[in-house]
Image (cartoon, helix red, strand yellow):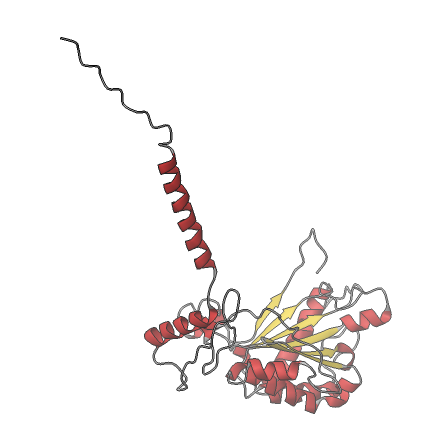
Length: 313
């Protein structure tokens, strides 16, 4: 009897197409998920953030209903959301940042006025900076018009810059009697507020070598310290204040000319947005609270030395 012929299996030469199709499908799903994660709907993100804040910190600070407008074309949806104010966790970067800060001169705060009011309309510290700037400007308008006092305001600080020509004689750190009324006026404005104060002393690059002041470091620090001492006598809390001597290493103008050197001889009173925080970053406050041995109470004095290899700001 004839033997049955063995059937040969058909070899599929396109078996690779099935795992290849699965791989392409998985890659498509992966990139779709990645794209969806990168496209954040800002309106929904704000609602989610406010919900988390309400869950962990209490109820929202607004009774108005939350209205999410229809998403605009493109990624992210609408930026503006009616019916709520973004909280600290919900502040999104403005695509067109505006320049802040500037001198307050004859025409007042200028373009920064509306900005500061908008940024700190309901913030006590920011509103205090704006209030102090307005009071200092009103009190020292005559000196501002003469260019002897400049006021700069940013969202985080207020700077009152005073030329040393009206405060000190050349090579002397004692405040002139005629200038004490100016500093007492500023102290009276700063006294009711809790904000931290840093007084910076600056000099020009002309060397000094006297028994009292071996270098511009000591001269700048002594001048700033005398301003702080006068503030303390006028009733400003010493724990709010710091003294910083910067010598000639933070010039505001080149020292090549007499006008430039005159510009660099200055005392800058920097009022910070926040009050001093007692704790690790505040050794005086920590000492008073018993965290470390008690040291003599008074303003913090800092003399900033330049890097020996870099004598530039």
